[in-house]
View 1 (cartoon, rainbow, N blue to C red):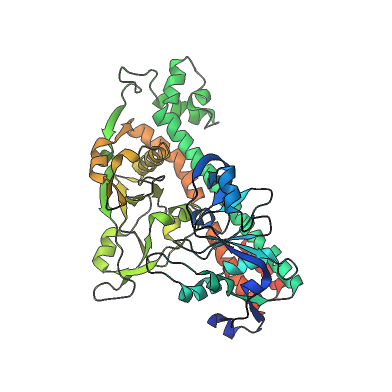
View 2 (cartoon, rainbow, N blue to C red):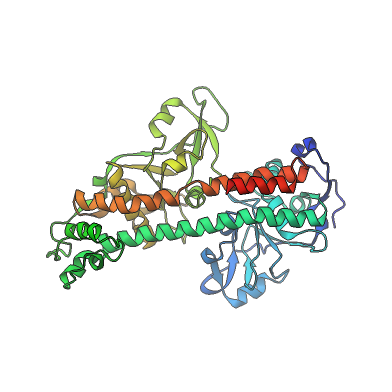
Length: 473
């Protein structure tokens, strides 16, 4: 138990109600650091949670890696994570993020992770998780970072994190009320994954497997069957079916289709920018800079930890993003993750930010020849990355993997079916991408982050918060 002085967030000094504050360690039966070794990963077995697995404040266990039973036993020697515990990242891009440990799951800590075990007699674990992820505490811990290369929090700082003490019934009510928003945000994320999978399924059927042509060649005559039951309206299905050739040519492609170098699809490509942390000389134009590490959170409907920086007006004008641009990560990667992952930018994404948006210097902006072609650009890149096809376009330089963009634009071949098919593909996929990138989760997150400190400070009552939530939903 800590007896040190509690450093209370400065923002809380303006709160109408001044709760008692105690260090995190005093509310827990244990705060356990991870083993400081890199676990050997396996294809199956118990899960290992790493900082990237909780970047949204939810443990995305279906994306997590696995370890052997032997490794699992070694890594839970200090404590075995269980339901009611909190998984907390202490270092790296996603430092200072908390997620709840799911029930009935074997999980051990990866590097950069901490296990927090709240005392259920003293604090509601979901209430604590909400507080640990709150913007108030996030801004507070910014001044307690340690490390020049990677941002991190040391264990004494984590154990001493300030936690406001409210009556238990109030903790429970806040946890239930605001936790419902997190549940909705997570459902939205899952739906976004489904929409992305639907778009990718259409792409693979049309441009990889040549499904409509093959089904025609096999004797199918029902237009709905030819199109793969993606369109149930008979008239619309017939229009689409008529666009596809009835047989494959000698080159293995639908007759009349051809392969083009990927660069054929682009009207422009440019590298990103990093700018300055504070205004300096000509670099006084504010920009939000999307990094490759931000792609998952932005695609899930949020804003991640996109930094705000300053660049020149000239650079911002040349590099600012527009709807249907595609960003590609061209530097970074890891031994298990190649460069080349991408994200499709929509107007909804741009609207999440208060300034011009550009990509970071480790990324590159691909701008298609037109909006219709943009969907082909993005889906081809998504499919290529999923199949591991971007590995062959990267080289190693001073320990960092770099995507060979010029070589890729010339050597990577993409199926070109002609404008009518590309247009209809865009018409089918555009609504999926627009729905996927709607800003509902951003609004819900902002509402949650606004209400939490107001509930803690006594500025609003629970009933008022419930009314605001009903309006937000």
